[in-house]
Every structure is written in structure tokens, then in C-alpha cells.
Length: 360
Image (cartoon, rainbow, N blue to C red; front, side, top):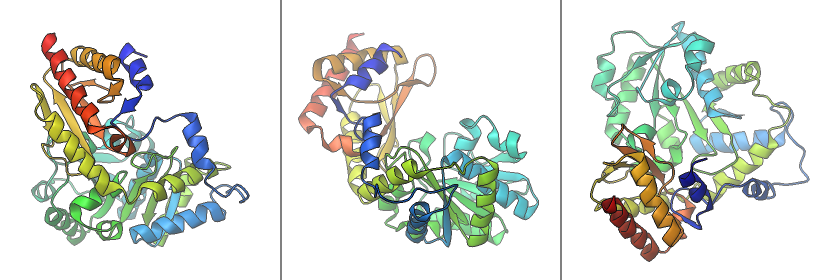
């Protein structure tokens, strides 16, 4: 662990995410379940089935199935749609999680090829769909687009793109790991957004802060098939209840806080926007997430942030990653922590960061 990350873990105040994730946090989450209830067994039992039914209603889908990971859930969803069309080719954004974070699992395990839509530095559009030269079984949409700072298409564009797919007999899948974050921007319910898609995945450890876990939702036949594939992937662990209890508790605790988190992101983005050599992406956040781009290398930014932590015990950012040798970036997502820090302390920290960046 680097010196920066060690200080980050110990900082008293932090602006990114929720409260520090410790083993104790997870244990406390589990205490909110019915400790006298029977555990699930290999994907069955009231504790898992009741939660699946709750999420199905929330998303407006016929059925849902709980997975230990979103990686497993999404690969299975695309496998089902590919087999339905007898076409092992799908389309998604060049910076899709399946393309850059899963070691080519979709291609190696399922022999499914990918068509990359649009360019890495922007959202794909209806025009990109129209320009596809190869047929695909399914188009994956990610809302929000994490690797672009949480960017979102306008509602009308989203409707037009999903309608185009439907008219051309192409299935649509939503990577909704952070689905609830986009609802304030669109002014829609989860069910209204999910109505546009044939299948939907949501995560319980990202926005909500649970231990781990995901839900895949769609029509009954689709979910029946996904349960078979879940078993094939080893996803039906003997017991999943620690994840289910944590997921349900955190979901119910935070699902209605997304507008508050979004307002926090806009406020923090505005504070940071005046820093020289710093750019907010997008300029005005459209959800509780945004990226901060520095015209400085990682080492310089980390040294400056360490000085802020030494003097104010305040972590302004999380990890700093390199764009190239002279530039870096950090991802901000606002959760419970931001509202617990006094605005005066935040502004003092930002002023100190500016001084330290200039000093080098």
C-alpha cells in the first residue's frame, strides 16, 4: 500500500462514498436482518425469494434472481440473448465493463464477440446504432456511463435508441449497476426506465454500499434460463444470506437519497471547478458521480493531497490514476459521507490543495 493510500484509509473526514468500509460495517448491516429466519439454500428460500420479488416490483419486471456478482449476471444475460438469436455477437460502448474490466470473460467463456459502438470519449448515439455493419443479438446500455464521469443520454435519445433496437429485432440489456443514481436526472421511476429494456442488472454494493450482490431482472422465461446458467457458473452458493441481508438493508436505507447525493455532487463539482489545472467531467454532474481531471502527474497530486490530510485530516478524493505521464484523474461519487463534513472544512481543504499544487 502506498503512503497516500495509507493516509486515505486513516483520514477522519472523507467526501467520497459512504462511511469507511470495515468488516464491522458489514456485520452491523447483517444485524438488521431477522436473525431467527431460516437461511437460503442453493438459491431458494423465503429470504432470497422475498427480496427478488421486491426488486421485481421496483423495476417493473416479471421476475428477478439474486447473483453474488454483476460480472456473472451480465455475462449470463448476454449469453441468453445471443442463444435466443443464434447470434453470438453483441454491441456496447468501448469502455463497457465487460470490455475493459473482465479479462475478456464474455469472449473466452461464452465465445461471444463484441461490436464497439461510438468512440471512447463520448456516449454512443442513435446514429452509431444505424451505422453498425454487423448484425448483433443484443445492445448493452450503461446508465450512467461510469468511465465518462457518469454521463447520460437525454431521455428522448435513450427512447429513440431502444426503440430502434426493438424495431430491428435486437434485444436490449441495461447495465444499471448504478441505476438509482440516474432517476433524479430523468425524473422517472426505476420501472419507467427499465420498461425500455428486455433485461436489467443492478448492483447492491456500489451506490447502496452493501457487502456485495446483484440482481438480474426480466421476463419469467429469461429468468428461468438465467437460474440454470447461475448454477452452471457456481453462483448458487450454499448460503447467500449474508449478502442478501446486507443488500436489502442498504437498498432500503439509501434508495430514496439519490436526489440528495446528486445535489452534493453538483455542489462539490462547483467548488472544485475553480482550481487551476483541474477540469470537472462532466462540467455539471448529471448524477452523484463525476470525474476530476488534473493537468498534473499522479505523484504531484498525491503529494498535495497528503498535505491536506496532514493538516485537515480530510480526504478530498479517493484513488488517483494516471491518464498519461503528465496528467491524472480521480472518480468522485457522493454518498452519505459528503453531508457529514462541514462546508467550511471542505473549502479550506480545496484552498490548501491549490496552494500545494502551485508550490511544486
